[in-house]
Image (cartoon, rainbow over the protein chains, first blue to last red):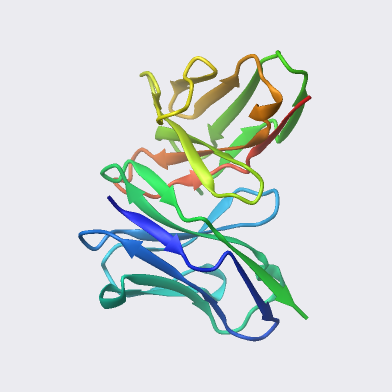
Length: 113
Length: 117
């Protein structure tokens, strides 16, 4: 069964420095993968999705993620963090034949001045 | 596009009462809607999948008689927490999948925070 593991529960960066949020997947084939962001007391917003068209996926707000089959990873990156990026980030994989989404445990991103 | 709303955004109720939460897709038709719950500082856990015009499919461990789901139209699903107890206090989030797109993307509502006293 497909699953995702987010390696860090908390990540803290300084404003203007790069962001790296790690996600590894477990699947017998190349799955679709998503990153969602959740700001405090708000709904989840889709940042980007990988659907096998291109391994480097660009999303909203300057985020991107690279699908690496050899490492079974789909890490989320951003060159320069902004205060508004502080939020909870979820790596997500479709399961149940694509009819459901299974969420990783989440990574809380803190951005400091 | 692809906006999902939830109402109410927060609710406080007494133990033993029932609470209804609405989930609407505002600018698209949703074949399928999903209900999740999220405890503080935890991930989202799928409770049930709701298809328009048919009975909801509940995940293992979720009591269908406690969490009643109705998906009466392609734009509205409701979750009723019956005889609520303090342990039902949580953040409930719905999502919807668009009818015309054969893909897995779900669009999420802003969530409903339930506090049972």
